[in-house]
Length: 199
Length: 199
Image (tube, rainbow over all chains, first blue to last red; front, side, top):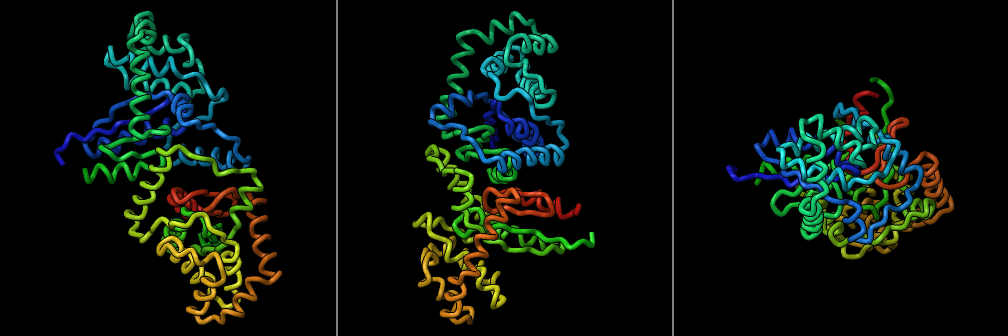
């Protein structure tokens, strides 16, 4: 208690479950006076690092996954929608989030890209065509935004965040880290909350 | 409401998460006046049917899985212990549970084999040497028990249960089915409970 309680939230906009975690984590953090540090990671890189291949799954399992997502959306009253284009390239959007720190708009940008892709079936966030529009809607000059997202500094920052996640034991998204405890998945939020009550 | 509410609980004693589900499901069923139908399935057969191979997982993921199991055990105050011999042959134990229906002791037997393997690190339930002792402790003649578990009828019953599960869309254990809704995993119990409140 009275500690500086920070939740490191490792996210990837291409990850279905990161969408849910993004929305489920905030009320928990607020209830316990914890802050959330948003850390984008390149999940493709994480999987390649671990030689992890998304395998072909049985049809019954895929059907259940879709039904499960519907249940989560209903239960938490989220306007989730499975996108028709999947997977997408996400590195520009991830770097865009880092770039937005320059304007103090990281969180709003994260919300915007998740809403575009996971609520409005808008895959334009793969490219600057879509990302520039989001920047502009936030009052950020699109050219300055794109230049920042394409900068060496921003590229190094995403690589560093991803490597840092790997070094820490992160293997997927969403992952929430509190101190040395690593929680993986949208369905571990009650354990995240328990950890906050004891730290 | 007022319906005959039954939860079909597909379990496999070789499945770590079935252990947790076994204990988490009962209080939910009791709260809602639902009955549990215990249906053993041969999970190896289910995986082979789906050409599903338990893949090698990254070390970080395995480490997290073990920590996660510790958290579940602590949270639900269960004396769970990772067995040192894993996986084990489970078909005799699964058929044994079916055989025990003859003596009205199916549920007690299910509890006993899960406790032996997942709480006391006792892998003797692979063989009749271990299973006979459990039968005897329940006042069931071990020879009669073994004969029933080895009978063609009992073998056909396990095959039928497993095939029936597959036909229904079951792809893993634990699985809970209520009506047409299929819930997979120890971490979907709150959705099971929600389903019971509406059915």
